[in-house]
Image (cartoon, rainbow, N blue to C red):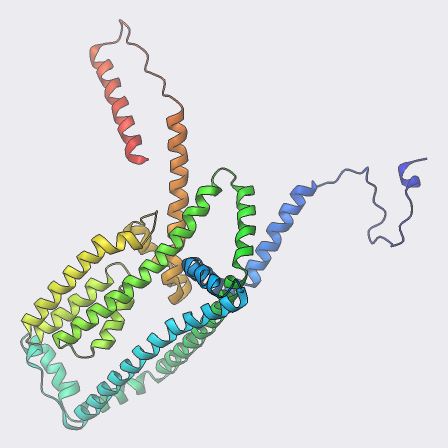
Amino acid sequence: MSNIDSRKPSGEPRWLGPASPTRIALIPPISAARWLLVLVALAGIYFFHGFLVPVLAALVIGFASWPVYTRLLRQVGGNTTLGATIAIILILAFLVVPIFIAASYTASEIREWFGWAVHVNKTGAPVPGWIAALPAVGPWLGEQWVKYIGTPGAIGELIQLVSGANIGNIYRAILAAGNGAFHLVLTLLFMLIALFFVYRNGAGFTRQVDLVGERILPTRWERISRVVPATISSTVTGMTLIAIGEGIILGIAYWIAGVPSPVTLGVLTGVMALIPGGAPLSFTLVSIYLVASGSPAHGLALFVWGSVELFIVDKTIRPKLVGGPIKLPFLPTFFGLVGGVKTMGFLGLFIGPVLMALLVAIWREWVREVELSAAAIPEAPPPPPTEDDSVDEVAALEEDSEQTTAFRKAAF
């Protein structure tokens, strides 16, 4: 009796007919499972790519704050739900309270600007002395000031002229700004929701990632699993603390120097400090304004103070905080910031440098492995010179060998 006849009939009918265990599969089960996993992952990325940015931001913040969260978890007796709730409340307080204070000061300063514009539109304003004293462009700027600001009613006419000719563009810009603000609020909301579950289920997720990582990279995962969290934590924490510190210190310096709207300029300086070269550009422009407005001593003092503060931060604090064991160079940091902002918006300021730090870490791990492999294999000595070889050829071979060795040491 054949195998098919000896099989016991199943109680459930098959959709595609009877199957025999002796038949050979067209696709091996392991390959089919791998391809199915890849297809499911691609489908998930396609359908949920809109949530990719908040999830990445939640993972980055979770990695960066995990040591602090573990201490908080010990204080609450290991209750992950309570610990995650308290952590989210603390993050909200850390984000919302400073933003609310800065926004209130900025709104009051904007009201002062608006009141000044209304007053100038009613009575006019003379040309400032520092504008008229500018070389080459001072007279032309003075004429434009008198035409659009100095004459009573000139600001109102300018607003009517601009709004009348570009009312459609202004309407679209307002809609785009509203949509951008609403999208940012939704992104922050989804990020906080994802961050709550990262805190609550982070330990189990970490164990699963370790199991998969040891299966995929059995020889490298032990070091990568130590380097990656330290890199993420130090990069995010260092960038945030440095930006906040520079914004506060330079904002106080603006206030001491008598710069108008010091809080707004301090907030802008803190945001610019996230970008390489942003903080020096900010206080340099403010120093130039002070010099041009008739306060050269204040402008020079502000520039010297900003330069000294920037030197201290870049030489002592930044190398210890940003990058951790990676010590991310300038160019990858710049590309990570610009690319992150271009593709992910404001949250890309943190996600971009973290991704670049991970790429640099993986690259250096590969280079380190190649270096160790090359050191383990002794290089074959060059063949001894024969009687036919000239002295110049032997010297050239020795020089090439020394240059090759020096290049390898410099590269690795």
